Each structure stands twice: as C-alpha cells, then as structure tokens.
Image 1: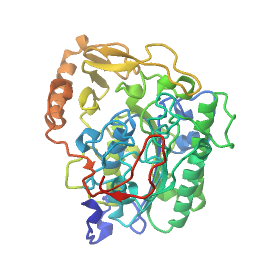
Image 2 (image 1 turned 60 degrees about the vertical axis):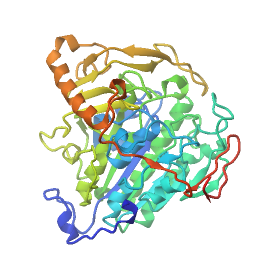
Image 3 (image 1 turned 45 degrees about the horizontal axis):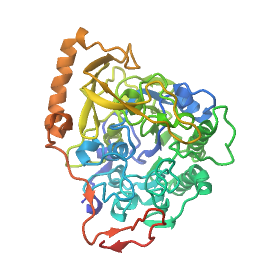
Image 4 (image 1 turned 90 degrees about the horizontal axis):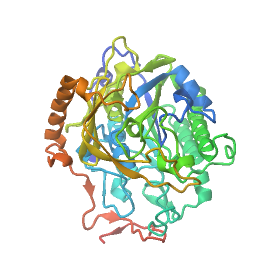
Length: 495
C-alpha cells in the first residue's frame, strides 16, 4: 500500500525535470482550491455578474486562465476521485456522491496527491469537503495528508435536506479521524469558509520553511448556502453572490499570505471546481454561462469548469489557455514539478506543465478526453470536436429553477448521436455529425479503445482496466450512522 512505502531517494535534485529551472534547494509549494458546484460563469474572469471577485480577477491578471478545463464526472465523489488519483473515476471504482450508508471509499493502494508529494518530504493538509469515503480508513489522514479538518461529504447530507428530511443523520465536522462536532448547525456552516481558510493560512505559516501541499476543497457553493457576517447581504445577486464573494475572499487570504511570507514565486496555486452549477436550485445555484446544462450532465455546463493557474515568474501573467485539459492532469504535473515518482499502476492524466507555462506551440497531450456518466460512456472530446453518443440526461428544459433553497424538478430528455464544433458552438446546440462523418468515425475509434479498457454500460461492455474501490471488511474500524441522530463519535470494530 502507498501508505506503507518508504521511497529511497538518491540525488533528489537530479529528479527535478531538466529544463524547468526550478530551484534545487527548494521544491515548489502547491495549493489547490476546489470549489463545490461553482458554475462556469460564476467568477469575474469568466463573466460573473451581480457581485465582484477582485482576488480571482487579480489571480487571472497575474496568472493564466484555462477556458477548456474539465472534470471526469459532474458529481461530487466521482470528480474528486479524478483529481486526487489522476485517473478517470471509472478506473478507481468511485461513482456518484457517497453518502452516510456507503461502505466504500478510496482504495489504500491508490496514490493520492498527498501520497505523491510526501515522497519528497512535503507537509500536506486538507481543509474542507473530502467525499471519498467517511470511515476512518478512507479519510485524508490515512491517505497521504498530515492534517484534515472538514465535512466528510456534502453539506446538504443532514436532517434539514429540503427533499429528504429525516433521511440523513446529523452532519459531522471531523478533524483527522475524530468527530469534533457531531451535529453541525446552520450557524456552524456560516463559519465553514472562514474556518477552512484560516486553518490553511496557519498551515502555510507553520510550514513556510519546507515544501507543502494544501488542498482546500470548500463546502460552498453547494446548497444549502451559508455565509459569514463579513459578506452577508453584500451582493446584488443575493445569497449566492454573497457566498461566492466569501470564496473570493478566501483566495485573497491565501495569495496574500504567500506574498507576505515571500513564497509567491515558489508556489503554484490552482483554482477550479468539482463540477458545474446545480441548476434546479435556481436562485441558490450558479450559472453555466454560455455552456449547455449543468451539474449531473456531461454537457460542458456540467463538466467544464472555470479554472485559474497562478505562479508568479513561472506562469505567464494575463494569459489564456484554450487547450483541453482535465483535473486528472494535476497529479502527473505535480510529479513533474517536484520530481516525484508516479504510481506503478495505470493512471489517465498527463503532464500539462507546458500548457501552464505557456510554452510556444504547447498543445493538449491528450488525443481525446472521455466523459462517462456512471459507467456509460456518453461523450468524447477530440480537439475542438465533442461527440455525444445517444443517452438520456436531466434538464430543466428552459423552465426556471427553484427559489429559496428548494429545487425545481428536472425532466428526462434524450440526445441522439451528435457532433459539436466547440470553437464555433460552445453551447453544444448545432449537431454537425452529418457534415463531418470522418470526424465521427475517428472519435468512434477512440471511444472503442476506451470501451475495451473501462467498459461502457450502454453497450454492455465490461471494464478490463478498472480497479476496485476500498471496501469495509468485517473487523474494519467504522462509524455508526443513524438517520435523524448524531453519529457515534467512537469508531468500533465490526458491525
């Protein structure tokens, strides 16, 4: 297991990739800010309206905006599995949004971002929503992170869910593998963004003299929306705008801390999201901007996310990257930058440092990106083209979303085989498959190669290259969860 491996590193400086001119005395720091349910159009650099995001605007001016950055699936746990392991979530067996009855989580043999950089002696911390399993063996501190504070899953998985009241136990706040608050309240949620941010700042201050990785997966802007008094009522967009403004404040606190400690020129900061907006929540949801649909679909409104990369002196300021890339590329890119070894098992991500650095002529290293929903291969992006295979999807079909935190109902629609030119038609509105049969055939061949590896439930193709998730076995430590009640705060053996 990766947790138990001791890596022998000889001549560590020689592992730093040639030509990137990184300091051999000081490895780079990494900060990853991961926002929950943030729409493509929800921050200033991507056209947000009704509120300001001055820190993200500055981050974009000083860094590089990625306009075509994707997640593996437009739902919580699946998306986080892709970021954390460098793999399509189908490969590591994590689907959907794991809830309190789940007995699965990230497998101990998967290499996480935390495991990766600990090869090189990094301090590692996660503050926020984990959502890769909530029993002790699945939590961050047993998967490559020295510290953890946060919610084990989404903040709506509590007794006050607008549609599923009484179906969830009380919401726990955890530190390490301990429950430090067995019954998180609305007042507690008001302080989550601030609390996560301040812990991240303190961690950076404590570890300023050694390399570090901070993973900051905010619980917001996932519903239910909560915000501190610092930003309540500040936005013309209402509560949603207030919440985004506080997220922007959080980014500012991180960047200011790095500048004050003179770490800015040795730190890569990545800001992105786990999927697009949860459109059924209407005025409590964000905007996909020009993109089609939102969370829960593999149209670009669900899986293309607003992203900004920042590293003064290393990433060219005020620039834009329009090449397709994905969160699975973060792990191999960090490995390239710090000289860490990739796992022995197969991963799907590729090094995108040339794209981040704005190297002349840099192109996406991927022949194609593949979009599964569950275990069904629904779409493939190849260059500017995106091909959807026939599949059902949820949609509001032009109807308004809900109000006040209560969602509207989706209906089910179906798309036939459809090819879109994303350079001309970013909203995926005009099917040009009949005009480009050669492109359809080329993408179909790539899809068949992927189906042979990761399967396709729509075509009754079983995966050959997928690995099992972690599973609780008899005798494993676990928490006891009872709907409508606080969880037992002590882990116990067996059922």
